[in-house]
Length: 74
Picture 1 (spheres, helix red, strand yellow):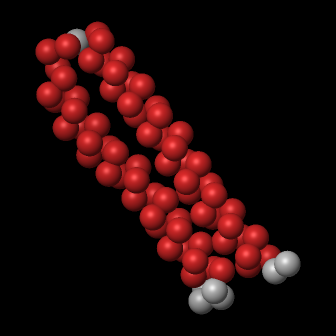
Picture 2 (cartoon, one colour; picture 1 turned 135 degrees about the horizontal axis):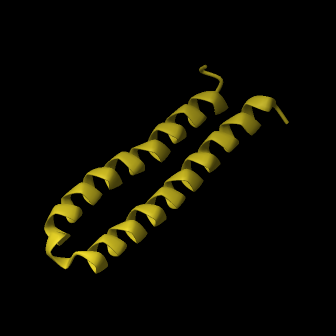
């Protein structure tokens, strides 16, 4: 097995793992914030959706780089 295949697989796996952990933490803190201050729900929702977009960009980028490494383009 080539080290490029291993490196590409690790990049893709850790990107997905990081996004899953990030989403879990984001929405647990979002729900904590709503439980503490229900009147701030609208403000918190917008901020959490922006953060969600940034968190979900990470696995897409890691998949792209992982595929580039797998096919030997880098």
